[in-house]
Image 1 (cartoon, rainbow, N blue to C red):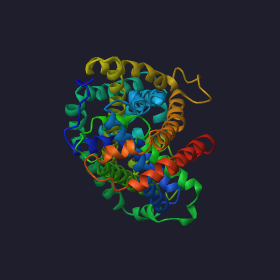
Image 2 (cartoon, one colour):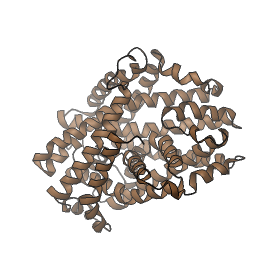
Image 3 (cartoon, rainbow, N blue to C red):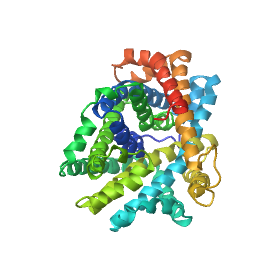
Image 4 (cartoon, rainbow, N blue to C red):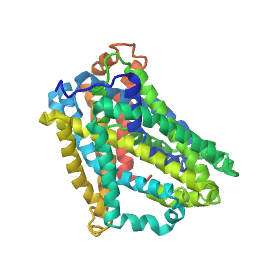
Length: 446
């Protein structure tokens, strides 16, 4: 495996690549919706507190496991404890399930970016446009193929020439676009009403549901329990500081999510006449509500094109991390070189993705527990498997191999400043949080 285990050339490349994984579609439409729904500033405050505690602890753990073992998640857990090798297999299934349907959604946003760039904002704003598009047979397939091939080309190039090099371009570009769009939107006439709605704390909204919503968003936003951070950690140089790197990733991820809210909430709030119901979660906000907003906005065609370009960049950086995780597992398991591993992963992911592609068209009558294929894959991976993987990781590190396994790796080149917090969180607080996420996913509709 020595010939296939590459490393990031520098700390900046690692931080930007990991931040790129964390910054995804959830930051750009789920975070703003939840913030608006659960009290604006109150939600933001809870989210930030959770990020610097819960999120920090889980991310540090996964990166340290990856760097210490120099392995993919498939085998890394077995190195910690042979009896816990099953957890690596469970963690491996998560990116395998997510990557195909994520590329389909990536194809959707790429299609919308193309529509906006070619000046068809009026067409995209029609209520029937999105429904007609995803229920078609050929068009979603073509854009899905374009997106998955684009991701493959980056992964084929390797860790240094592909992931690290592209992250150094995409992530600054993504941040610049986010800042520029947020400044433009908040300076529009009437936008301050939306800004106040988004930022001013509504203390009445502080509740268990606010906490659970922020906790769930943070968990999914930071690419935890997908095997990604273990994989990227295995590429991290031994001389780089894990603790400070994680803090930088958190800042980048939270900043983009926050700025996305400054783009979406004021824009939708103003152009819907203050209608809170317009801030719906999911595809309706991204693919139906926002095109209508851009249609009515001064300079909306340009804003819409830049916004969906931003979404494409975020989707691409996340899909790259998902595919890299799966490819690293294949390389490690079968001892294949990168190119054949990439081609196999692309081929299998394409076939799995067809279920989601046609789940809204020719196979729309076939559902699993009353869910379309994409919704089913999303529910199983995000709401069930990921919380279980994270919960078991906490138990393994906190009580089986003990926290010194992680602490020793972090302290190879620097003092672990948050060691006390880490021990309490990984043993007691994080497992409780994971159980709450599971409970909310199974019994509450947030």
